Amino acid sequence: MSFTLLPAVDVVDGQAVRLVQGEAGTETGYGSPLEAALNWQSGGAEWVHLVDLDAAFGRGSNAELLAEVVGRLDLRVELSGGIRDDESLDRALSTGAARLNLGTAALEQPEWCRKVLAEHGEKIAIGLDVKMIDGRRRVAGRGWTSDGGDLWEVLARLDADGATRYIVTDVSKDGTLQGPNVELLTEVAKATTAPVIASGGISEVADLVRLAEVAATGVNIEGSIIGKALYAGRFTLPEAIEAVGAVSA
Image (cartoon, rainbow, N blue to C red; front, side, top):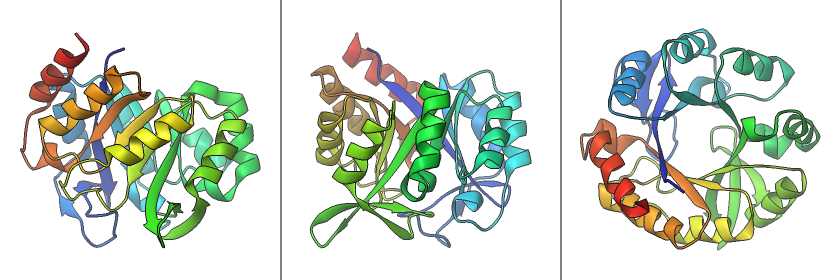
């Protein structure tokens, strides 16, 4: 199985940005979201992870802009941020995005989430944003500002409800360029039969190679989201694609 790379385009107030540890106010701006996404497309990306951070934080929406971005791309888009009810779900589905990511709703509205999973299956991924609190792994919601419960209890419930894929983020790593939390990702992947996508902390190509090598041993990590490292020029997307491709070749 090939290891999939998903360059991220996080949007705040109409601009592509990166945050540090998911905190509002830590944004570094990178210009047009469409230009960023087209750049990743030209670099060989098969997927883009497109996030409406304003919607995730509950302070607005970039829905029209994100719909335009999805419509202009010739690759698959994983759309995330503020999908918490039928209206926002239908709006996200109408963009033509290949996959939607539920975060807060999966924690706060379990019955609605169960219904969405039953209706849309593989089209839905669940975002698990993990913090360590008092020595225990907890899941965070509402732009990483609320406590959504014990990670393992949440994971067991979502598995029972039919979740088909998880995006797992170590909040302490996100946007820090300190390397991914391989231990956390491996633990989650071994606790579920659903594939896991890694997120947070990627700083160099070697981080992606390490994840791809773990996946090659049979651990169910199918890919990684890449954000700040690409924007900061730590490596190029073609370099990363070539390196992880060599692992699975």
